[in-house]
Image (cartoon, rainbow, N blue to C red; front, side, top):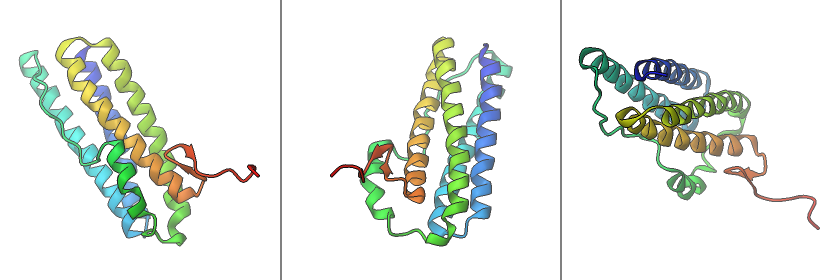
Length: 169
């Protein structure tokens, strides 16, 4: 895979996942849910803008200069520390739709993360460096979406770990 192909494919992934989050903003009535979906959509839009800029740079100069790519979504350890504060903020009547949207988003985030992992393994130099940051950010998105999905679904899991076991006596 060439760097240009990787950037174009990344743009497709980022646009799709951004659109899923925007759909979540439109379809949920829960204000906390709207904020989470909007924050994730905004983060993905920054990715789209960055990738478009890098594609233009590549096509004009044949080079890219990896620049710092920020994310509004905090790393997983910060999400875990703040998680308890969010538990009481969500309305119960909006859980089904939000759970559907989060499940769809989680699947797409995992696909996107896997794509970035493969790109990092294949590309040399500045391409690898640029996509390594995308991989880090997408992995944080997975953790954020998984947290929300576990909470909304009352699965008995917290960040993928079982909270309680009804079988233990």
